[in-house]
Image 1 (cartoon, rainbow, N blue to C red):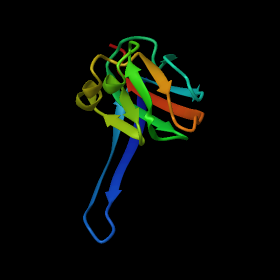
Image 2: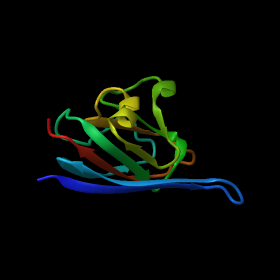
Image 3: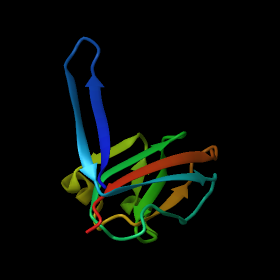
Length: 131
């Protein structure tokens, strides 16, 4: 049975333009993961889905947003410059957007080098196709 995921995106500039989008998508399954990323965490693996199936939606939110809170997709990444910064909420909708991460996300590796060290509670939602 398909699962229905609704999403909303909005941007407002005071006295300026606005942009918004909203839609509903059907996925075969979804996964929700809560992960506590302790201060000074290094290469903390977080499994986000059981298989390398087609991800149609990826949402990552956190209690802390900082350029020094980073992650890599499916493999440890020694180079800080190649990691993805979690300096704001992330919503990727559609296989094209999710594809910007590279290979289909199955496991994320988190690195927390925030200063002063702050623990981060991260919430991840993945909407996916089974085949």
